[in-house]
Amino acid sequence: MSMPRGEEAEALIAEARKALWVMVGVLIVLWIVQIVNAALGYELSFELGIRAREPGSLPEIFTAPFLHFSWSHIESNSGPLFIFGFLAAYRGVKKFLGVTALIVLSSGLGGWFTASAGTVGAGASGVVFGYFGYIIVRGLFDRRPIDLVIGLVMALCFAYQFSLLIPAGEGIGWQAHLFGFIAGVVGGWLFRERRPKKAVEPGTTTLLDKPVES
Image (cartoon, rainbow, N blue to C red; front, side):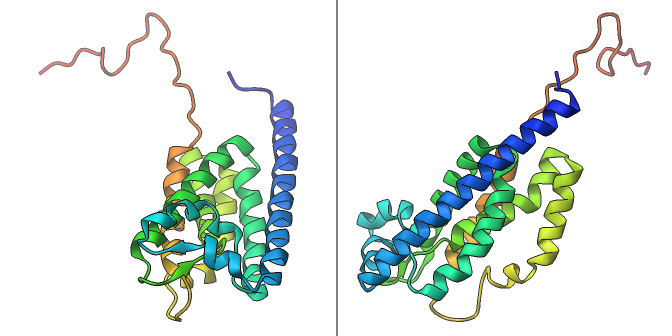
């Protein structure tokens, strides 16, 4: 049973407020960590970043997204992270947390498995690409026109993001980008809105019940 449009709009606004404050909080944490990290000469990024194919570095999958290697690194991630994160969360923060967990795990493991040996990966870009992929496909799976429009607009406005999925330059962990994006697309399907099936009224005939002459 669906709620009246007025109540649905109020619920959506309430979730949007939560999403806004969640992303503000995330950015505050990222920048506090960055200030400490920079003061330590980025030791945290090397100690808590993902070391490719080193079993002992697997726990760093969950710390690496909070760490960066320079001020320009965190600056380039902060804007897209806030925009995509808010758009990914405004329909439900609980669902957003599930999507985030999937993206963090997939982008981190993908980078751990496929990055060059001897490299250390850190940064929120894998999560950024995950949210980007999720936003693009969410409208298709949820069948909501407004989300379809948002996904299309984001794809057009941030088309340059696709060129960063597998960049040509060295020193950029594109593996986390790619696996994060794939996880976001998969998350759009896994966390899609499931509508209850309409009950068939007694006495009505469905295609399965209808007699067919041969």
